Length: 129
Length: 394
Image 1 (cartoon, one colour):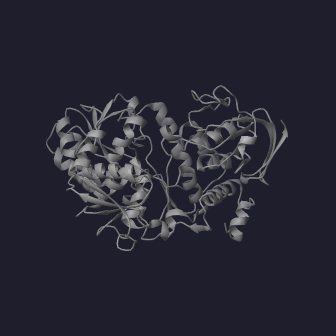
Image 2: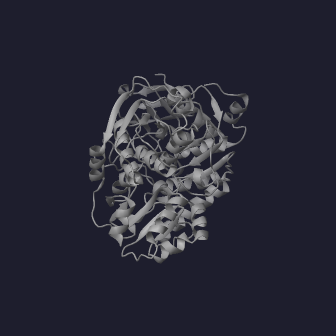
Image 3: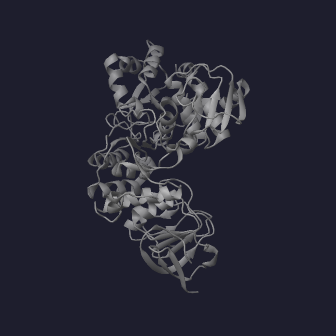
């Protein structure tokens, strides 16, 4: 699939998919990368080194700094794929240097798929289902 | 989006890692919002200054880029900090909070940012001209500069404003473009407005109605800059208004297209209902004025009203360091302190940790403060005009 580069770089990893938007501020343990938002479909899961797939961001603008903090603590996702990247996530991934692509039909990606992400070219490839 | 050779060189890392990331951020945001090019800005105002707002991740980010040598290219001011940067100990701000707040201030200072922390930069030495492009983030200051001054800015986030400061440019979209500065609603005001809190209540009501659109007001007979400041701040908080026009009072009001606008009438009934809605508490522990930061005139008005009084419960008035200096010199600070009040500089009630300082109910005359205090500071709110607030504390 081909989308739009938000932040450059390449990554390969296992997909972790959320159908719900993600707000980063207050939703992650910044030391471990564990999702801690009560009632969120990803609650209790760890996003470290995963390809994190979700429709779009939500919530506080401090979320951008949280994405940066996750990366600095080496617990950030290896890459991010969105339906539509809004400004909070765009700001976060660019500052953190996490490869990110949007305008992707994320319905086609399932939890556990192995994903090859080439953000420079905006290409998302499902290498193993 | 069109980029100059110089901009492309920055994107290729020609000026180092920080400018590269900052310009990448601006270009991407520009593409998301349909900008055609980058435009120079005359000044910047950065939000996300209080440790309460940005916490450890934000603090560490700012320290990181400061260490990597980030420097701003244009006059850059800051939003209020989480405490009075000089009198925090005396006013009871927690020590560990202060330590982190000072880390943030040092990081900004080393980037060449003016550490004047205020939501009213236009009263403290950062005054844009009519039609000047700027990149500001404090929502009430955005509303004031667009509407009352006629400068041009979008509502920037903290990082995007910082990026604009480091690059000296912003993407050309939104309110930088004349077509987008036209009004979408006609607000017919059919009641008298006396106190700042009346303008705050009007702003709160209209912001809820028009959300992020541009209102055009008629029926406001007169208003000074303090009242317009209160009106815009409330609309920016209850909605996301970044620009409004007032017939006869604001500079672009005569220039914009006003035909075929949907009309919303606001009378005494709507205003009374807004006052009732914003009152969520009783018997304030503390009254805090100066949201947005008080002008010298507002401080002198308070001093006049407090002259010779002895307050039973505290009144704070928040302002910028510049206004505090003038108030000190004029003896206003002395009068207010003798009555049992305080002039608090550099910070405001919304971004300071008042919920950890023993306060549960706060009295305010600001529609913006009344909007944010219940959520951000877990406060019950008494929303009233300044005379009533002084009465309940006396």
